[in-house]
Amino acid sequence: MENTYVECMTRAKSVTLFRFLYILCIMLCAGFLLLGLLFANLIAFIVAIAAGVGVWFFRLRSSVEYEYQYIEKELSVDVIFNKSRRKHVASYDIDKMEIFAPIHSHHLDEYKSRQLTTKDYAAGEDQPDPRYVMIMEGKERLILEPSEGFVRAVRNVAPRKVFTE
Image (cartoon, rainbow, N blue to C red; front, side, top):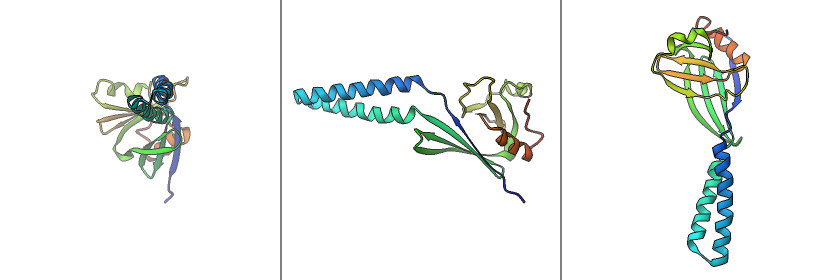
């Protein structure tokens, strides 16, 4: 039997709030560090260290990418922060999938009134909208931005559950 492996990466929405807070923390860190050096003030040094921690945190969260890996009927989602740190978010069994369709597909109409937990792993900034919705066991709604190869691989496993129009 042939093993199927597809990997797809998508860049998440750039959060301008994180960029703003990153720049603000840099300015606070530099300003309070200068105040601490000029007046030998311990409180200014503590605020500068706290602002430095904020710089590290907001820099890490300012660039986020999602990676989807499809391996033998399993979808694995990882998040990559600042192109340097990877964190495994979730794994999903494709056999438990109810439907996989484009986000504006009429096939998803019956699922719109359901109370589902939504997990967004897509950017959704391009036109036309490349996002797909995957409903898992009637409990979760996953929003993904897959490549054509990814959709094709899932369709090979569950052809009656995958829609492309």
